[in-house]
Length: 217
Image (cartoon, rainbow, N blue to C red; front, side, top):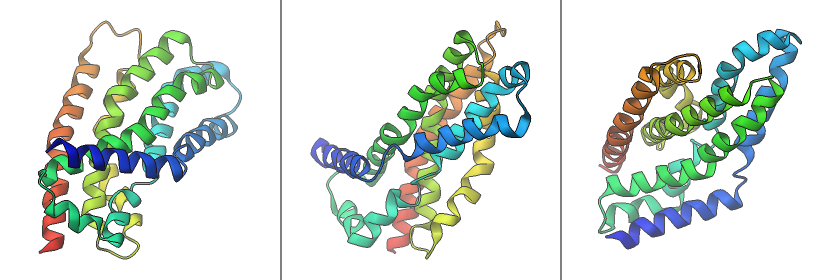
């Protein structure tokens, strides 16, 4: 059962590496670079809203490539083979989500402290932002898989994925930004964020697999 999962994971990582896995980081950089032009050069203001800017940039960057998460498999017939594989479809979808997060989400987590310097975000806040993104970005990947599964059979369905998942991503954004405040002595926002990530990690592959089965029927 582990062999099909390893094959799905390695295949998706290879495709992401050959298809421009750094595109999300470049988009993240553009968001962070352009924001000071919109809000002005006030360093105190940028430092105060810096975590929100980093989280918003990571959220938007994580949307890139979601339309191809399952669409390519649908077009070349790999999706039919996934239905016939000995491993449960839910676990195969989870492997694809993990590959997508490793290729797009993890680079955003690593880049956030570096980009925080451009917003005059201190090291302590940058560390909290990176930790919150490490916990929260898997939830965004799981949500994206559900949206991709729901639109995989539609022409130009990739345009609908952000519309479907952004409302569900709002709680992740809210508690993610709240968890970046180093002055908070309570770990409640980070705990809630971790709870959301675990919940989406369980429900996301199941919901996406159910949508794929409905597509096949």
